[in-house]
Length: 631
Image (tube, rainbow, N blue to C red; front, side):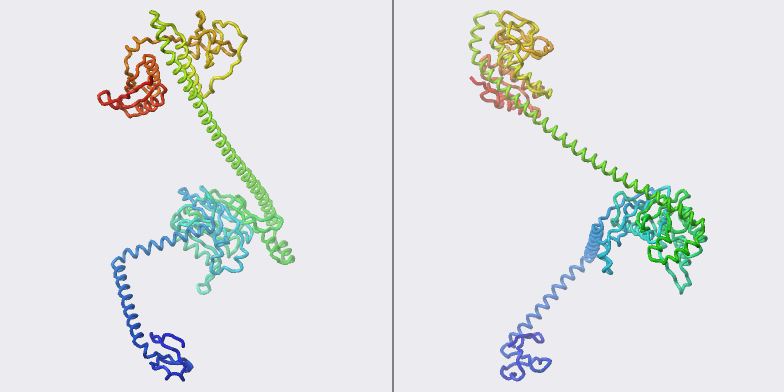
């Protein structure tokens, strides 16, 4: 048995002869009458419930829809604005997709009347656009990319007259200029190259095509004139006027004169005029009138096939005979046409052909020059990239060199720390020696070590600041012998290089980069090289306990820079260690906290410092750092 639905109720499909086998209600028969739609009595209540529930569902759906409708009705204005916004977004998206389909550009808006469409293409001739047209068929499959044209009307010129052979592309270029102007003013990108500029026109007029009206008794010529009259009446500046085959459809002499007058009339009124023609009168006007530009579409000299490229400055030729021959016109007809042409016309045609040939050659040279310029610009860009890469490498090398120099400076500081530690170990012996002598102790071993350490650090630091390299490790020694005043020598285990300034017994006063130090002559070795410049002498003496007591246990560095404060603190700690002072105070003040942070980091890393912490409130608090020295 088959279950189906009939009149909103579930029924069984049974054969007519079995209708009495199942008690129930008949809801109809099939088209042939062989089958009946039977609702068994046992399912009547179930179907009734289903129908009732469906009616309730329909009523609930209606109620919900009414509620939604009432809600939308209360916000009809918002709904309208939403629809308008969605429509606007849909239009913007359509514009964007269209622009992407032909790689469009946004033309700049010119305020000086410059009309420049560079590399312009008619949108409907672009395969990506043509395939979307409703009438796209087999012709689209054969479509190739159109040849781009430069359409230029640059002030002071206000008119462009395009000439050239038939089927050369004049009308397509005319339509392209008008269509791209309207696209730009509609907010669309245009199929052109970057650098295109367009004015904003209040009106655009076009007289293109060959329209006739038998009912209005209008011929081709009459229709064109009527269109031009309407254009003149409705013209509102700024305006663009497009004229195809202006003056056509009547006597060539009169039509040419009329075409010149029409172009000049609209130009004088201030409109931008683009026109096409075959008339020699109009060509002569375009090539000889200031404010009018003439351009011709080129052709292949060998085959007379159109190139669809505009040559500016050329009056061009129609090439009627040549194109007729290429299209298959019988040679007898062509010979007769040549015979009917006057000698004057033949000479003029030959001169025009030679002029076109020369202009095409110049255009070819111009294109070659443009390619060479583009290649030179590309090479220049590549050179700039290489120069930037070299500068980056130089910067990285300088950073690495500076890093190595700082590492060597840290090594020198470590060497100084070792010397200071050795100084502390020998301090006791020096103090006992001082106590046995009433007079001040002359500069001895301790002074030598301290000054040598300072000189090593100063020399390397100076080299780092100057961007140079550390002092050479192994200068060439001269033959052994006693040193004399003026010798360039190498001093002590640090191999400091200086000049002997004076001799006193077994000691020598040596000038190292402008600083004096005294060293035993046994540790002074003569070396080669230039003599270093002299510098003021520096007196070195031992500090006694009495002097240290007079200096106190406080160091005030308020007002110092970080470098000055660290230098003074370093010397202060050395003096304190010599005096066996175990606790000192460094007064730096509050300020911005930069000086306190720098001193804290320096003190915690100092080899003589056991610990450094802010002083208690009764000893200065955060403005003072309390330093405890090692034994």
